[in-house]
Length: 231
Image (tube, rainbow, N blue to C red; front, side, top):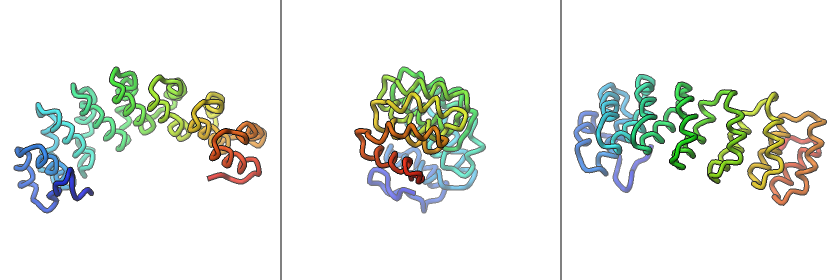
């Protein structure tokens, strides 16, 4: 737990009732009050944060989503946080995605997939970063398509996600696209795919990585070549 936020002590020692009263204070105090409420395991703190989801101030709605994500009673608010994926504030939407992904609420899947196509690039980046945690196998083609996305941050997220969701059935499709990428991170992930899923015959392809411009890739490939298990 953070002891301070923006230089202000988080009042964990205060009662729930005192923290609720602090929500009417200036933003710096209100922020630390929400943080302290998030670690209270009682119903009053939970219901207070939940009620803030309907506040006119998007800052309070975002803090409420974040606080509920940490609260012991989160499961009772998952559907409310799901509704926040349609909030008019992109800041609230992004926070809701992070919370739902952290709790692996797969009911958020379809909306997060839709947000990958958002006009707001930051929202797209968050949506892609959350995909792994609500992923279903039908998303694999989308992940491969995103490897060539115009957004560099999106492209940089993909190698790790693809590596984590690949399996024996689909890894070769990803590998064939990634092994010749201009991005070293993507080539390294391709090399990792080869090590993780490749048969002895598949691993003869490791030779293409032995002369890679990136030293980490060359080192990793050399371990595959001699038959050891790279880490």
